[in-house]
Length: 210
Image (cartoon, rainbow, N blue to C red; front, side, top):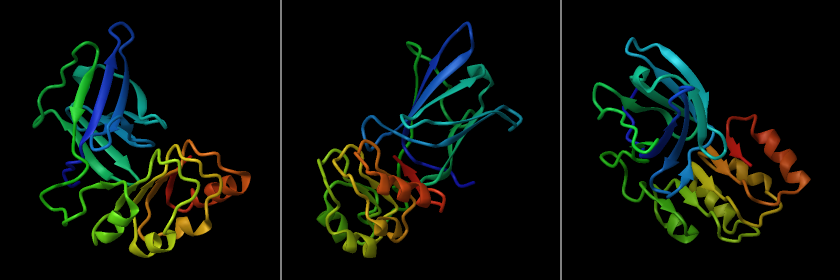
């Protein structure tokens, strides 16, 4: 498995008596933005999985292990792939301060990205002007529809963030965008036709958050 340098923020709250751990993963390049629907694998010193869980739509997860048992934390996600979040042999020890454990990992491997690739674009024209752009972030822009969708479809995008807009109808061609792996349309007043479309395409390999 290739080493992953995706910067995330892993927040873990530790409860002494029950040994329950409440965690949250966030994308560093998008402040307070959670990593949704990510599979997490916690392994011991023998590289055996001791706990497996999935983050919810707010990036939270729960596990029930001792923090001292955790030697490796791995993530698997439709957009970010299989990645190493923590390895006790190479990382600083997991330290809980004020009931919180904070880990930061980068969204991009800045040593191998193409020019213009390592960025979350919030402007469609700027996104389209860059050959290697792949993340389009249109969150909280009060959009009722997606402009220049034909050009976006041709250009290609791996992740499309459309949270908290005023979009009621999702066009079918949005799911046919080249290279699309992930789309977040949560917080939009989607009509029944769009919900049916989302459920259909959610089964075809695209991770859709709604």
